[in-house]
Image 1 (cartoon, rainbow, N blue to C red):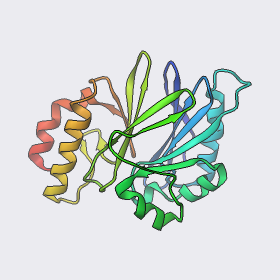
Image 2 (cartoon, rainbow, N blue to C red):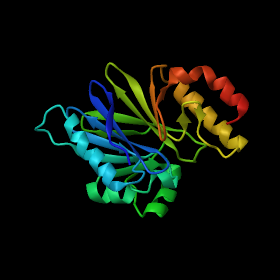
Image 3 (cartoon, helix red, strand yellow):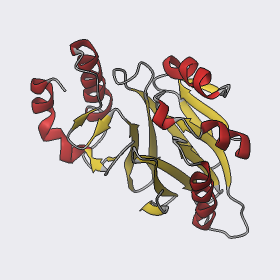
Length: 225
């Protein structure tokens, strides 16, 4: 269990992160400064730790008189280490639950949570004061999604789950077809679209930027993982 920390202070948004479980899963909370609307990314494990993260995010609202409220829980993909606290957090907060359409059935079976929305490539989420986008990145799982947070005067924030890390794309179990699909999606839908200063927040470990990783795309493709 880790302590939550502010990892990005943007003009209109604040991002907090906490690490949970023996898998070092990153759980992220985005708070809209003006409205108090919050989005949680990956209710991975340790419900009490995640509820404490959500409570801490109340301090990130610009006006103390405006209450913070968790509007949505986004699950980046269906792997068990990313969903173990989903039911508890959804029950405690009554927030909407969202995940990629092609992973939704697996998430519902594993957690007993009926998802509010099944996401496709290019879908958006509107919360008071902010619109988020979604990018479908196939290969690590069929329905992996990245949440995109654009903020005035600040770099794009990409919450990539297990699709992109410092040093490479996510695990595709040495399956050439799955690797080609994931590498292709990451290349075309992230690197070809967003600027080098885009911040990458992965599902485990340290963040990076697209600019730091871009020079290595040829190496990743050649090695096949």
